[in-house]
Image (cartoon, rainbow, N blue to C red; front, top):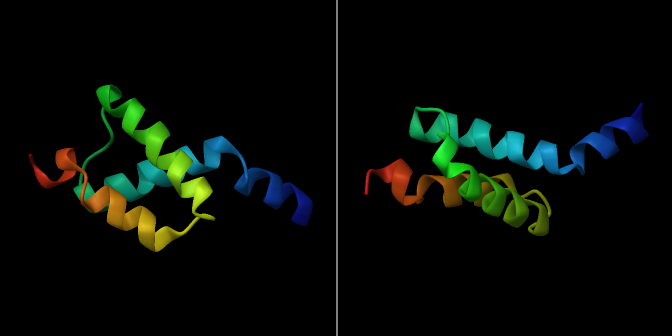
Length: 69
């Protein structure tokens, strides 16, 4: 079970899911289809930063679409 959990946590789908969940929580709306490149980019950064949730929230909160620019 532990190995299965690590496999899921280290998958790209997990990273994209976390980005979408954080986006919905912070921006109070779901990610739109034209923002799929943003999701992929932030998910990659999230993985490279060792799944740092604080930085993920910061990146999403300062995204232009989230703050209304």
